[in-house]
Length: 92
Image (cartoon, rainbow, N blue to C red; front, side):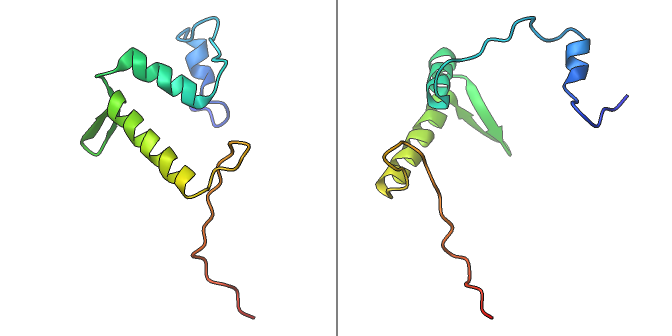
């Protein structure tokens, strides 16, 4: 039966979920860094026939972070914002 709400419940009902879910206490970047260390040399992402190993993906993440920091898009609280400035102005 197809569920329109909460489709993940089917997985629970079949017993394919660990009884206790581990919750990572840290930032997304820290979680990603841990995954890189645990899975270095393995494929992290495949997209249209192009595969990225964890180390390469980490390098791309670092490059993007450096670009955003250089563009001063990261404020002093460490929050990132991206502005779309190519929108045409509304004329009345």
